Image (cartoon, rainbow, N blue to C red; front, side, top):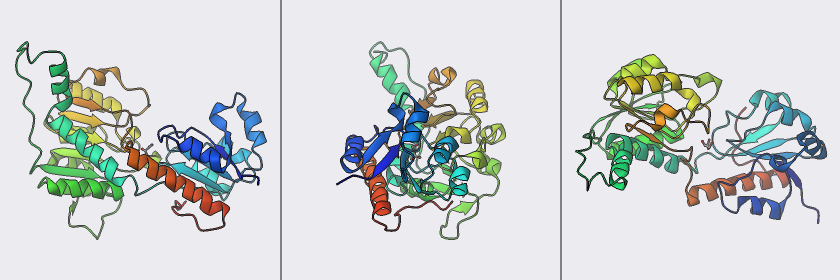
Length: 317
Ligand code: DGY
């Protein structure tokens, strides 16, 4: 029996075994391995399904090269790297992998917050360098987390999971969203600057893309202030990275826990030298359980398409 053909834009290497599972069920055209991209796309002219990742995205050029394309199944929750306009113009549907990663991403946001507040990464470097034994002086004191004020920018599914953890730490929680929610008791703040100046910790969990470009600008970061800590598990583009680096260097911003960066995988060198900063390489969903659940959901969407069933997690576009 011939297997349906799909075009895979990038490897699902972040999910062990995922590429093999894909190849067991489908004839996979691997665009990322093709020496000649144009020839590869031409050979995929009959393809109806693309599999990609939030990191690899899908460009207009690819969407327009495939006349039979019907659906793009993306591994990841964010879809700012997919050309939605081109997909809309061609009537191409999109699926992502929401919900299955909420807890892991919220856990990592929390890990970054505590690591910054309590100087965990700094202390780890101190011990490894034998500075404890060498008695090179005490580490700077951390700042307490429990009972503090937490601001959340973007109270979607991940933001809610972050807030839930905050209540466990007896935190006072306020948020900013595109629109206020009527199903939560956390206080809504319309002004980002006011939210930041009220907050001890500001966690960014909003969507990426042109609508949120540099939403957290210099004035918001300044409002957070010298004792404030910003945590970003959304997209690097949401924070004005240049302003953040400058304010951290001058002490006008207290600390930063960052999983995402503006020009990944490039991380500004200045950040790498700062002890008040904790850096992670865009891995908030990277646990065995969550990555498998994301792969299962991608495969379930592809399967639903080929068996004529409704897609499981369509993105309204
Ligand atoms: C996501 O799922 O959007 C992650 O950030 C991976 O890019």
